[in-house]
Length: 213
Length: 240
Image (cartoon, rainbow over all chains, first blue to last red; front, side, top):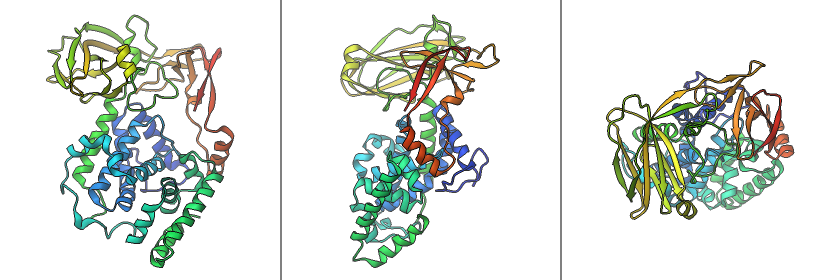
């Protein structure tokens, strides 16, 4: 898929180099009031943000609300956004974990807007609690993630589930790389502890960890 | 079963975001507008157009009021009819004074929060709205009983050109139409110009460099502020 600047991109891709130059420009243009540039950022990142939200809240319309809130917050808090490697994705993912933790509180500010946006398939669908597509999910893993403290979930999301480097995660979370490393180590230990009785969920998590070092 | 967003929801959300970014661009000091104010205040990004009696910062708009509006006092949510735009008017400058604290919005152009202090001091926010044929109404949304005053003036805005100094460097405001070599800044203590290249955050080239910068700079940078000649230093800006 091509974005407006003609650069090839991959959802969730965050390698170093020229790839993010275009995003740096998109963000700079957005800050100057270029709505379409922000629209391209939305096109670029909403699939990854949606997938992550779905993983955390397990229900489609709620995940859509989380995505909307994350992007609205990206704009509302634009002066405080930490841009990592020219990209706002890491910041969006941290916001996504925060909003997902308490969706009612997190989306309250935008409730009127969220209710106004039309949907083809309105309303939460109880049958769609879990999805076959996207990352593998099971009760134990979703429950274990849900039981993590917010700051642990943030770093697990960035490094373990999305494959950001520790340095990138540290930057967006406002930590030194060493502090991030320690936090990640502890968060992983807590997650493993919670999954101790569920070897299958642990195996799935470990296979996802293959993307990180 | 689906692993992607409802396409209608996604398309509507995208449209909403594009419009939000487009219409909330122009900000000035005043109430808290959707969160923190920028660490660096770039002078003349739209707001400078308010200063009709001063020569504008190069690159900003020269504003000529075509028809000054009369203050309209309102309560709660109300739609105001501005009447037909006079000939030559390109934009409407809307000034909103909050007289009660609480959330306020003007549909399509502004949303913000008025604090108790803002209400006591009758602080204002102002913003611009392009004149559009058939679109001459403004809806203010506020809590029931919240008191406000709105003034809408029709104006003609004309974009001025960047200045050029003796070195051939352009200077002026950073606008949506371009960035000069020297960008006008104003942090309330010093008014001058900073080099656009200094303002741009240098990007680390690899994770190790990013980690090093994070540790050594702590995210803060200090850049010099010059007069428009680009040589005379008159102060410094701290960028957090």
